[in-house]
Length: 305
Image 1 (cartoon, rainbow, N blue to C red):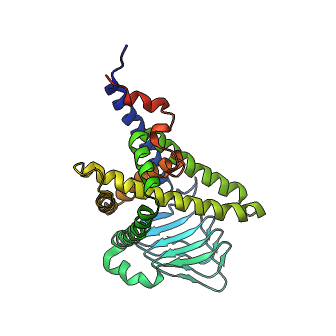
Image 2 (cartoon, helix red, strand yellow):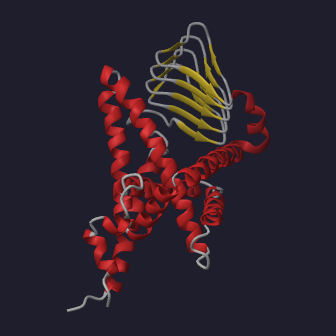
Image 3 (cartoon, one colour):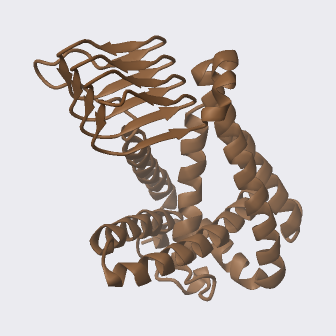
């Protein structure tokens, strides 16, 4: 009896969407503000200064668009963190964690104590924060980051297309024919890299394995992103399936535009890259054709009615 593939196709994309949602929630959860513990005052403020008053103790002190000031004798058990402002530590103030400022400075009195690290980022761009605001400056930084990333990916991708066209085409076919397992392999590959780093950091074995693993991950990302650009370009322009360079440019431009969408854009691009990352692993860096891979669940999609 012949099976109808339309139900499986719908179910497959629902499953892929679920994995996408879980991945997005996992990534975005790392950006949630720290919450004060029971019995402590609020330690999070947007659009203004945050002051930890004298002799008070809080968990974390975090401000967006303002300064964090820890007054004399006050203590922060976690981190003191300001975006678009300074971290001011008065006499005898104490920070158990780090003192960190983006677009500002860490100003510490001599008797103030920071048990963690003191560091700043974009200190010289404080004028941008004042002119465009915190969100505007962060968005501008995000745009610059993605533009630089795409320029680097474009240069590397062109070299890969010239040097390894067969490998890239095999990965493109894998993305198209095995999307479900491409995503699974992508999530698994990232998880394996995180676990390897966590287990071997600080050891002699880690000093050898971690750089090698990062190098392999970089190559995997470059091959995967190149394949994703071509695959997306083919979806846009189906008339000329052999115009790989044109497809490459169209796909790259599409993802660049998506990356410019505030907050969501970067997450979507990262998710799409995850398919290419997994397809590269699944296709063994393009040495195995998609038709040779064990179809398992995906085989239902290709059955004739």
